[in-house]
View 1 (tube, rainbow over the protein chains, first blue to last red):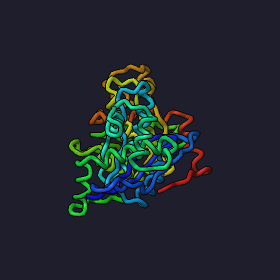
View 2 (view 1 turned 180 degrees about the vertical axis):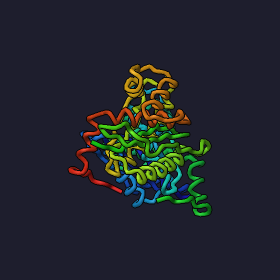
View 3 (view 1 turned 90 degrees about the vertical axis):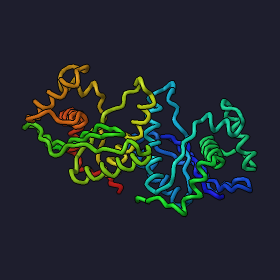
View 4 (view 1 turned 60 degrees about the vertical axis):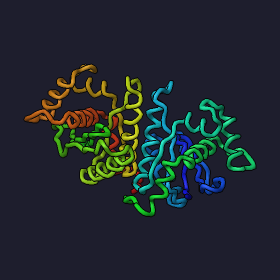
Length: 177
Length: 177
């Protein structure tokens, strides 16, 4: 069982991404990771166009088997922010789905619990867990990269998700470009 | 001053659209109107792919000068619904913006006040106002079409928005396809 998983931490100013190769027998390895930055003075729609273009390039280059995206929390203190984030997340799901790449969503608490055993772990605890699990010499920066790698790690151990990756060569999904 | 305005009422099951030709001297006329229906048993991402494809075809056919979309209300009783709607709205803004079509947002209360003088008008009052303003023999059905036409009507009288349409031949926006 081997799968390339792309984790995405969606944002309208910065979107983090982290691509891992996961195999059952060895620790996951980082293939690619980074952030896309968007002009915070630009309109919402111009940023969505930038997200589409940047993410499409990342998926084209890394050809992941699965894309894992953080679930938005419905009880945000700032509902307007959550709705705006929904716009970015919608474009991210679109770009993955029209390439025929299955999408998985994980709640932030689920990702934290997987990495540290505690759904309410601090940012610092999560970052150190990522560093240890991936054997990195430094903590990934900015935090958006660490969050994206955390989502990818969580997905890479999700047997439901990686089973999809195993099935893909036998049951290719339609790719709409 | 003449502008073709496409109003959109975003939804993940049904998205309504209404395209009007507005001119300063005459009542607006309906060029096109209808709904796109999405498989409610389909995944969120598969519906977003369908929204992209259907809306792109509508914009390609009608070549509007402006796209007007209802603003999502940040204080929904159901924040999860508002976030999901944000996904659809994000794809709609993306499809318009990458064709270089300016996007305008209007709050539901603003649309109702424009059509009836009352920001808390009932659905029935709004539908009858649309029927009268556009000189239609029947109330547009389903309600999603009426809502989309209402947003387009509101935008067609917004001098800021239609001024953009006037400027477009002189200042074409970059079209990213």
